[in-house]
Image (cartoon, rainbow, N blue to C red; front, side, top):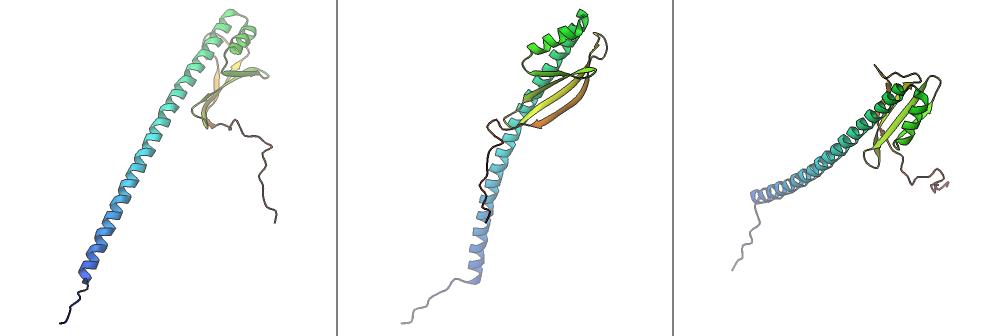
Length: 157
């Protein structure tokens, strides 16, 4: 007796190849969709944190504006303004030739922050424009644990 061994045909091999390819592409598409979903979630969380920090920054600017108005109404602007701004733990100020420079950095997360800087004339009045915004931007924060003395071992070969 003669045994016939049948070998899969060409069409069978192409069909198997197509099925394996389509299943692989489907798996990759699902993985990419899941990755895109995670990225969208992280982006939404960052945007929420950024908006919260921006709103807090604007609230702080309004508080500094209130300090300017109160100090100007009192008549002793320079003495009262410095005392009021010193009480705000988030604002930094320094005196230049004809104006105060007040700045504030509001952290968004560990690597970015919302920053603004204003210039207040030494003779600010309670009416009209009390300050000029000189900077308002998002800045990168320096890591707290970084040190300038950190050495990188490099082979000089």
